[in-house]
Structures are given as C-alpha cells and as structure tokens.
Image (tube, rainbow, N blue to C red):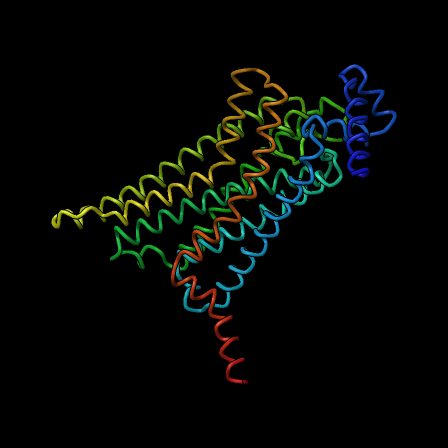
Length: 355
C-alpha cells in the first residue's frame, strides 16, 4: 500500500507539471530535458497510470503468442513434404511471414514506450518501422485476397486448378504481392521525408510510428498524405470486392448443388460467414486508418481524446490478426493440423518404443 501511494503521488506530481506544457513554453521544456517532454506527451496519451501495467501485459502476451504460434506453424509446415507444394499452403506461409514481420516491427516499439512511459523518438528506427510496417500490412491483405481467389478456383474451377496454379505462377504471385506491398510503402516514405520537418522535436506523439503520428510530426504534408489515403482506400476496396466475389460464388455453387434436394446448405453459409468475419478482423487496422483519415479530412483537426482512442486501438488491432490467422487458416484445416502435430506424434511414438 505505501508503494502504491508513492507511485500515485509521483504520477500526480508529474501530471501537474505537464499541465502547464503548451506550444509557447515547449521550447523551454526541451532545454531542460527531452525526457520530461516525452513523458508529458505519454501522459497526454495515457493519463491513467494504473492502466499502463495492464496495457503492457496485454501487448507482451499478444506479441509472445503471435511469435510462438506463427513460428510453430511455419516450422511445422516447413517439415511437411506432403503440403509444401499446395498453393493454399504456399500463400498461407507467406501470410505467416507477413504476420511475423508485422509483430516484430510494431510490438517492441509499443512495449518499450509503455515500459519507459514515454513516446517514440523520431529517428532511424521510426522510419524503418513506418516503411516495413506499411509493407507488411499490405502484404497480409494481398495474401488474404489471393487465398480467397485460390479457394474460389479450387471450388468453382476444379478441372483447371492445377493448370492455373503452376509453380512458376505461384512464385510470380508471391513476387507481385511483395512488390505491390513494398512499392506504396517506399513511395510514401520517400514523399514524406522529402518534406521539411515543421518541428524540431526529436519524438512523436504516439507509441508507434503510424501514418497519423508521423504526418503530424512532419506538419501534415499534403502530397504523401493524399497518396497514402487514395492508394490505401483503393487497395481496401479492391480486396474486399475480390473477397466477396470469391466466397459469394463458392456459396452459390454449394447452394445450387443442394437445391434439387430442397436442402439448405447450412455448412456453406456458416463457412462463408466465418471467413468474412475473419476478413473483417484482418481489415480492422485499415478500417481504423480510413476512419481516422476521414476524421482529419472532414473535421480539420480531431480532438486529443479521439486521436488517442484511434492510436491505441490501431496499436492493439495490429497485433490481433497475427495471433488469429494461424488458428483460422492453419489449425482449423484437418490436413494442416495433422502436419503440424505429426512431429509430436513421431516423438511420442519413439518414446513409447524406447520404453
């Protein structure tokens, strides 16, 4: 109890010291120390100090779970010779790689900011995080879309499936996915850093280097912001349309096969709804960005509370899909589940034989 009271008192004093921080006297604060300004900006994001340990635990658990489950799935699929040639497994492994890159890029920044209780410094790592994080998000979205197309061709055009998905075309598809993901990230980063910084502060006002925080730090440059918003919205709409078309056509074929028997294909409906829900979960970061961009465009400037809600929500939703994707697209499939569990089954069989 005394330690808790001391912590609350220290946080209250620091909050009181940060109340007088404004645009006019921020220069004086930088002279006294960058650490205090970074702490004040952190308190403006998370004013309740008791919530910081809980948020830290949540982000640490999400990061560890994502690394473990994605690493285990990638290792298990790599040891399976029976599934390594299948197109769905090839796309699934690329999705796991994108999720691992996304977790490694964003999780350490958020956890470090929460532990240190200060915002992120705008340096080399911030620029790398902005570039790599954007590319990994686009790669995951494009891979999910290609997986939907692959299932559509498998169900609706089964005769030509092996003719369409050759090894050469699979490698070409993976190459195009990463080129499409890296290109907008590189162009946006180049356009953003071609602008002159409007502020000399060495830190941003967030826990990770996401577009809103970086653009705010750079003084809201118009050209890179418009390019990012238009390209991101066009990609989002294209992927959603392709995904809806693929699963709607699969549902139509499954439903037409049962119409002569006057049977409602409940399994097909549940499958379509399930994967559409998983797509919505995958799109949550992009949907949050679209909502945030619309807020900045139509309202001119959002309130600090709204910006904080969007920022924390974005940091959380960036780590949720990498935790869910291996369970949805891997362990839910019987063949992949068997391939992932086969090393443990062989190990237990050897132990029984030795005994």
